[in-house]
Length: 389
Image (cartoon, rainbow, N blue to C red; front, side, top):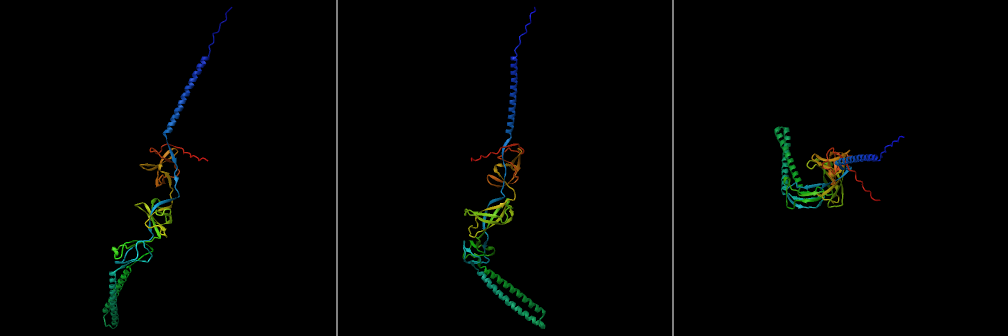
């Protein structure tokens, strides 16, 4: 009987499976580590690039008001102001006014003693009398020759001579009469009158002083009208077009704190002063109680309408470059440097009169390295905390 063959023993597959599992796990672990490192490298690269781009804060320009309250220094002057001179020569005989005297129009201020003019007037009257006598005699002679010529008792030449002599004597009489009238007018100047109501602000003569006329004339009195004033203001060129007549103006003076006086622009020089680049403006102000004294320093507040659109920016948005004043604007993450023209300086803010449209995003505190076309990140605006209810 043939013996049956015994089959070989079967090997266990457990170690192989475990080994394969370990290999797969190792491969997966390595792949995950590589992927994690790749992600970390990508994130680091992104963060590095973001950190390389400058982050800036921006603000929007605020539009200027439709009218500007411009405060300017002004000089107060009397509306009517005159220096009183003499038109004749002599010595001051009497004086009726002094500094601070309030006078009325036509009031006598002083009298002048003019002995030389008096003597000249007496001589002129004597010359007039002589000329009149000569004229009378010449007229009689001419009339007689007119009668004699009818009977041919005199020649025509004698008649013409007599008539010509009479006409010459008439001219001499007229000249002497004009000289008398001239001296009479000078005699009237012996009395000095006030030309208008006002206050004597200066007296430069006294009794017995020598009074001259013409080139040697010296101011005797100075008179000023106090009930109406003129205020002169130099308006900068940028506001020259707005400072038109009838513009309201508020006036304040240092010695009257809390008081405001209302006036209006009366007239302008219509020309810019090339030395100061300002327009001279004159304001009329009623002063019935004579509260404000002429010569005072005044602060004038003008409500000037602005025809041009202006904007205001913080001073820390300005960039000073060699090519001129600039501001940095941001659009779609790109920087543009715009030239601007400034108006007034308000301290923390400045007025921009040209260069902006109002829709720009202006960089605040721009770094010195900021350049045209540079890419930047715009920082989010800080949220304001709401007050607790």
